[in-house]
Length: 497
Image (tube, rainbow, N blue to C red; front, top):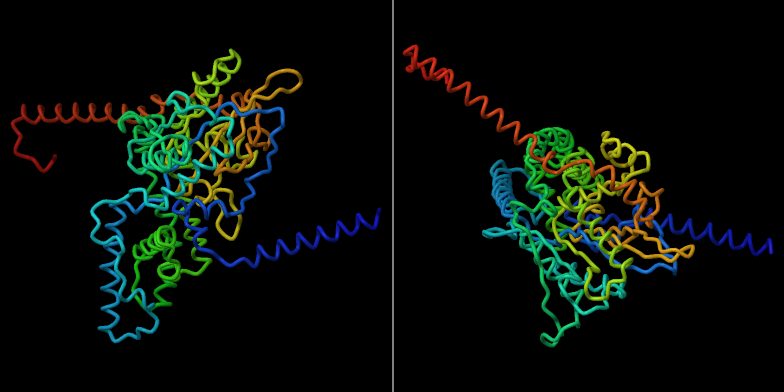
């Protein structure tokens, strides 16, 4: 018996050694280091300590599902297309200057000498592309397969609620998802599709899915912080720019390098090209550029400031309210077909990230206690140190959080639990002792309740009101000064204005 135990232990150690060796020997894949431009499939392949195993007790049945999802892979926006057009023109100038100065062109990669932006001439941008449609369509299929008891009823918009922002890539993502979710459930065409309702609020008033767009104080905060973020990234860009100038003999600027990194992300993610712009950077440089993107994400959209996620409280309230309604329907024995079983929302990284922060994802327990006390967190550590906060994991294209409400018959009484899935995998909740399967009461008291003291209007209108008061005060001062000048007969001295 002892000998058998020793043999098992030896086999286990050999297996662990082989696993560690294979992981260490795994070739560097830039497609897994593209921050929030990472494709969903590549994100799911990234191993992260945040994910935990989760066994649901046999006595538990899912009764409601909440989904908050980012749109799928999209084309670059009009602003970014203009940036790539500028890069196109400047690279042409750099190569021409090198030729005129009779520099050796051997250092210059062949692709770069004649490169033209694939999006040159496009006047629109930001739309969901075919790969993004595919991501959401198959996510819908997998959700139905994973939770058949939740999606076994005849479709009705009050039972299966689908909400989206008014941005076309988000609404297109909702449609693609629902086509997968209700695949072969209708009578339309050879694919047996069915019609379904997708609803949205006005951009100007959507404080549940576009709270960042309606929050004046957040806009002011972001505008004030963007120069500071640029300063944090500047030394890194300086270092990489010097190296690229040395290596390729072209007078790249920091802006060129920033645009080339953006091009790398677009080529690798959208076009599956990794041997052009991405090949300019070494793996260590890619890791540093990814970290710089993650730093910006953390400061402007994540745990870097409490306002970033506190403004998402209306969404958190909406999620909890839907769970409470499902519990009421269960407790009062509502008949099937007259109460909601799933509420699915499709939006943006600016929606998904704050929601992830509100429920404390990607934190250690000590860090969770800090945000509960509204204290600041340390910035994500620089490579090669490991970090939980990676854009490629927290908000890739089609990234999502699912909160599944379970009814459990335990100890002869009905109890309710919440399971949290991030990108379809169970994830630890620091507010629930590191478990991904949390009693609903604990979820409400320890994770949700501390945030509910914040009122969206108070958070988001305070600076707007101050600006109005300030503008009113300045106007009053100007009028007073104007009339004093008029009374003194000195209106000719306009330089003082």
